[in-house]
Image (cartoon, each protein chain N blue to C red):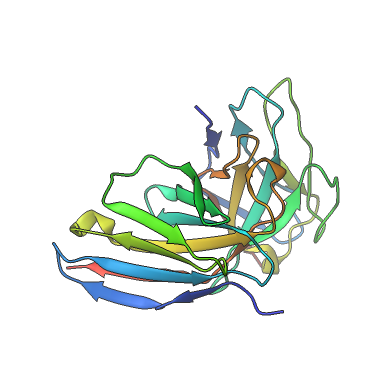
Length: 107
Length: 115
């Protein structure tokens, strides 16, 4: 079955520190991986997708097929990055989400 | 262009009742998916509709059903409500969905409380 695991429910860092949000997937085919973000009182929105290989708001994510991971990274966290982050996999016709990681960036 | 619109925003129902939630996708989007969001389980996939046909279904009981109209608007229905159905129900629309997996745009959700 298609599964997405985000091992950390909560992650707290200080402003300016590097941040890495972990995501592992189990889909055996060609994965389609995404990171979605939900800021306080806002709707869930796409942050980035692996196929575009973009850097959005300083975040990057690299697909590692050997480790079946798609970790989200940012070298210098900002307070406005505080939000819920969801990893999602969509290779098999439906988008399956991890349970999310709540990132808090402290001043 | 207008985003995904879900109505109503809030609902309070009693156990045993049924409820219908509505979702208007972004104009031109043909795929509509529904998710249940709870603090303990996160986002769980309910079902996806494309061109008025249910294309994918999650692991929810038959009390959860949905449909899509010719204008791509979608409704989901939950019958015989249980306390555990209390959740935020999110609708997402995308151009094609499915294996094409174009970006999904989410509505603000309907907060359902079952008492």
